[in-house]
Image (cartoon, helix red, strand yellow):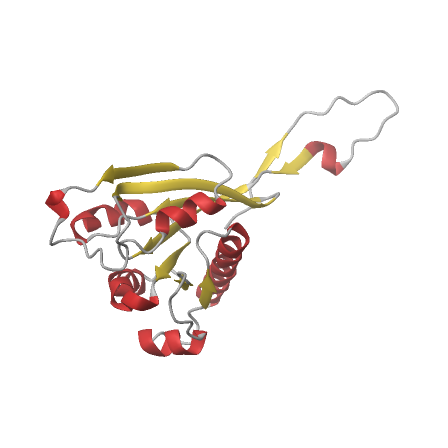
Length: 211
């Protein structure tokens, strides 16, 4: 990620010296992050928990048209679904702004993924231990595209707790891919997940530059 600078023209009075900070200031670096995972895994919740602006959601009420297509056994109270994307923004530091794009989870919306992922530096793949197979399409997509990603296990209430090692083994993830346990509803937990992704993406970028 390149740090851009913006220049301002200072007003210099007679006898005053011009300091470097008066002439050149760093502009925030804006980066794009994708939040992905299976249906009902908590993508909209994750984006909403961390966004410092009112998140843009494209949720539609689920109808009988989705019967037989969407598995609601683990999310019986779910009445809406994302049909395009979720969008939010978070400033992690004075010079780093993340724009979050949540992908639709259902197979019938996968045609949008290429557009949503374009320009991203990395992805958060949310996983539900009751339905680990639901995150396989996301893992396959990001592995094949070479986009750095972290796997974030969204710990739903009442579900068994598994260790990071258990999840890594179940998903056959290579050692460099970070795995974290998070609560998508909890802002500090979600922010920590994003920090892990940014660190991983920077490490991957440095390694790629060195080769």
